[in-house]
Image (cartoon, rainbow, N blue to C red; front, side, top):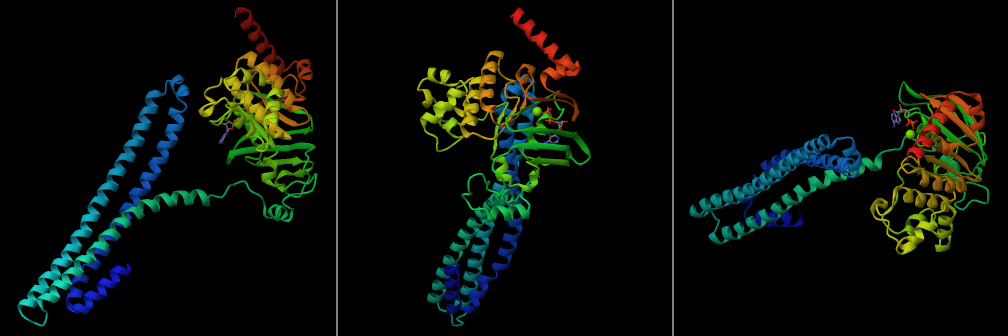
Length: 459
Ligand SMILES: Nc1ncnc2c1ncn2[C@@H]1O[C@H](COP(=O)(O)OP(=O)(O)O)[C@@H](O)[C@H]1O
Ligand SMILES: [Mg+2]
C-alpha cells in the first residue's frame, strides 16, 4: 500500500490530469472486488463445511467399516459419500472459477487504466499542450509499476477469503459455550482455593473424598418433553458397586452419564455427600472418574504409553504393577518388546480383550475414586470376560462404581442391582434378594444361565 501511495503521488506530480485518468479504474475495481468477495467467501465457507462432513463421514463409514459391512450399508454409505464429495467438488470448482475470473478482471482493469493514460497522454503530446514525450514515458513507467502491486493485492485478497472461511469455523468452535459449566458461585470458590489445596480439600474448596452419592427422584429428557428416565433414586457409599440391568434403551448409559455430569438431570437432584453436585466444581468432579467403555480408546504408541497415560509421572514399576493387578502383565510379557510393544492405531495390534485389559490397567494406575464401566465386556468372549471380571474386582475395591453389563454373571457380586425398564426402576436389590423375589431379574438370569450352559455343552 505504501508503494501504491508513493507511485500514485509520483504520477500526480508528473501530471495530475493523467493521474486522475488512471484513477478512474479504481471505482470499477472496487465494485468488482466487492462483488467477488461475497461470492468467494460464500464458496469458501461451503468448501469448509463440505470438508468437515467428508471427514465425519469418513470416520463413521470407513473407520467403522466392519459395522457398515455387517449391516449391509456399504452401498448407502458409498452413495452418501458420493453426494458429499460431489458437493465439495462443485463448490471447489466454483471457487476456483471465481478466482480465475476475478484475477484477470482486476488485471484487465489495470491495463485499461494504463491504456487510457497512454491514449490521453499521446493526444496531449501530439497537441503540444505542455506534456513532453519524456514526461509521458516516465508517467507510463509509473503507471505500469502501479498495476503490479494491485495485482498482487488481488491475489492476496483471494487467499484471504478462504483463510477467513477457515478461521470462522475455528472461531465458532472456540466461542461455543458448553451447556454444562460451573455456576458463578462455584467458579468464585474455585478461584478462592489455592492451586495446591491442603490434604482432603478439593480444587473447588469442598471435600476431596467422596463418601456417598445419592440420586433423588432423578428424571431426564435429552429432548424437551421426551423423558427417558423417571424418578430414579438410590444411594451408594464408598466401597459399593451398583449394577444397572435392562434392555437396550432402558436408560442405563443415561444414568452413568448423569453421574459423570456429562449432562445434568432435568428433574431431581444428585447429591455428593449431601451437596448437590452442581454446587461442586465440574473439573474436579469429572477428574474423579475412571471410565471404561465398550470400545476402549487406545492411542498409537507403546503399551507403556497407553497405561502411563492414566498418570503421567508413573515409572515402569508403577506401570508393571498396574498391569499385574489387572492380570494383564502375563499377556504383555509374551508380546515382542513387552512394555515397548506398539499397539498400533486404535490398538489394532491387540485383541479386543487385550485392549480392554490395557485400558483397565490405565484406569487402575490413575486411581480414581469413582468408576464407570459401560458394557466393557460385551464384545469379548466368556473366558476373557472372566479375566476382565477379576481385574475389575481389583479396581473396584474401596471405590464407588457403576457397572453396566449384558451378561448377568458379571454383575452378580454388585451390592445393588437396579433393573430398568423404559427409564424406570422396576426391581432393586442384591443378586440373592432379586433371585429370592422371583421376579423378572430371576427370569432373565435363568434364561441367560441356561443359554450359556447350553452353549458350553454344545460347544
Ligand atoms: N444423546 C441423546 N439424545 C437423545 N436421546 C438419547 C441420547 N442418548 C440416549 N437417548 C435415548 O435415551 C434412551 C435411553 O438410552 P440409553 O441410556 O443409552 O439406554 P441404554 O444404555 O440402557 O441402552 C433411549 O431411548 C435413547 O434413544
Ligand atoms: Mg448404553
